Image 1 (tube, helix red, strand yellow):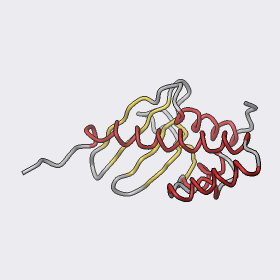
Image 2 (tube, rainbow, N blue to C red):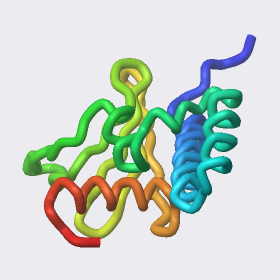
Image 3 (cartoon, one colour):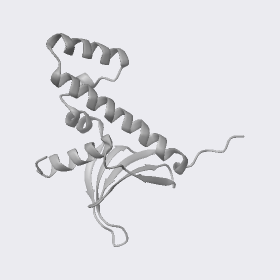
Image 4 (cartoon, helix red, strand yellow):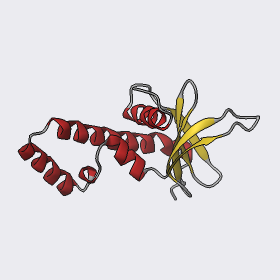
Amino acid sequence: MEQEKKCADLVQQTFDDMEADFKAASKFFEAMEEATEGEAIALIAVDKHKRDYYHEYEDLFDYVNQTALSWDHVEADGKDAGFYRLQFSWGGPSTECRIYSNFTEYWYMDWFDGASIEVPENSYTAIVCNMMYDCAYGVEA
């Protein structure tokens, strides 16, 4: 009988899946910005065929803003530092990015278990987290 996987076993794969989605979304919106009218029609047709539906959003910010569950600040509790949270799913399992002053973590949690990895600074996920922070707090890019 196969043993149920723990969060530590799943955190990297779930991060990689999210990273791939942000990369695909970024590439789609970049291509749409440079596309002629005919090319845009073709990009949308391919997007619909692949069932990504990025074409339903104005840009990457709109995509993240509409598909993430929440963006909020979690206060320090005396034990852990406060952080900004971009939450993607909730319940069992839940996923989120925690943005601290000097690094970002990706968390995968499921009923009394949780694991995290540090988000690489050059990743699409880091770009998304920084974009949300900058837009929410009026920082110019």
